[in-house]
Amino acid sequence: MRTIYIECNMGAAGDMLLAALIELMPEPERFVERLNAIGIPGVTYRISKTEKCGICGTQVDVEVHGEVEHEHHHHEHHHHSSMHDIEHIISHLDVPERVKKSAVEVYKRIAAAESEAHGRPVEEIHFHEVGAMDAVADVTGVCLALAELAPERVIASPVNVGSGTVRCAHGILPVPAPATANILKGVPYYSGDIKTELCTPTGAALLKNFVSEFTDMPVMRVERIGYGMGHKDLDAANCVRIMLGDTAASGGEVAELRCNLDDMTGEGIGYATEVLYRAGALDVYTIPIGMKKNRPGILLTCMCRMEDRERMLSLIMKHTTTLGVREYICRRYTLRREMTELETNYGTVRAKRSSGFGAERIKPEYEDMKKIADKNDIPLSDIKPL
Image (tube, rainbow, N blue to C red; front, top):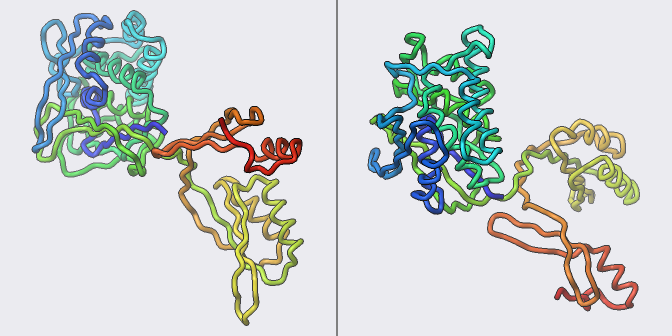
C-alpha cells in the first residue's frame, strides 16, 4: 500500500510540510513552476537548500508582492480575511477541483476551531495570520502535492506542539494556541522542552485533514525521504521529515481467542468451528496438544475483529465445553487484494491478485479450477496460466 509517513517530532507548519513534500516529487523544480502558475494573487514560491543541525533539506519561501512572509503567530502586521474571502481566492486557482475542495476543507477546520475559541459564529470569523496569502499558498501547495503523489494512506507520529507562549493578533497566548488545540482534539500530541510554537494552526489543520492515523512508524519499504526545514534555528533540527514508500495493507488490531478442549468429539469441534466462521470469524483453527494427566487435547483458536470479540466469546462458551477463554490482542498486516481474471489453457478463470511490501502474486480461484478439472477429467496440475 502506497503510504506517506510524517514525523512530527518538531511539530508541523504549512511551509515545512510543503517543503518536505516537494522533496518527494520526482521533479521538484517543475512542481514549483506549476505552483507559481496556479494564480494565487501576488504570490511567488521559492525553494532553497538549507541545513539544520547537520541535516540538509528544503526551505520554502513565499513572496507576496516581492516580500517574504511566513505563517507564524508573531506577525506584527495582520491580514484579515473571512471564510468567504478564502473560498473566493481558492475557487479561482488553476488546480483540480479535488485540490480546491481539500484546501477549503482545511480552512473550514481552522474556522471551526477559531469559532470555538472565540465564541463567535463561523461567518463572523476573520482570519489573521492564517488568512495571509503565504498561508493560502502553503495550504494549496500541500493539497496539490498530496494529490499528485496520490498515497493510499497518510499516517503521522504524535505531534510535538512546543511549549511556552506565543504572541498573536489577540495577544500573548499559551502554546498550543487555542485554535491549534481545538484542531488537534482527538490527535495525540505532547509538549517538550522547546520554548516556542512548533505546530501552527495551518500545520494542525493539514494534518487533521489528511492523516488517517497518528501512531509509530509502521514496517515500511521507504523509497523517498523529504526534509522540510523551518525558518527558526533551534537546538534540535527544526524540520518535518516525510517518508514515501510501500507498506502491507494493515488490517488493524485483531483478537485471538483460545481455549483448550479435552472432552469434545471431533464432530462437536467441527460444528463449533462452522458456527464461528458463519458468525464472521477471520480464521478458526485447531492444534493437537498434550494436557494435564497426559490427556490428548485440542487448542481451538478463533481470530476475529475487535468489535466481534464479545459475540465470538459467547459462541465459544455456548458451543464448546471450555470453562475459560484466553484473549490475545495482535496487530495484523495483510496484502492488498483484488479480484481479476486469468487466462489458462482451458479458458478464463477468476483469480485473486495480492500485492504490497514489494510482493505481488496471483492465484486462480480453486472452485473455477475444480470445475474445469471435473468437466475435462484432468488433474488440477494440467491447468496452466498462459
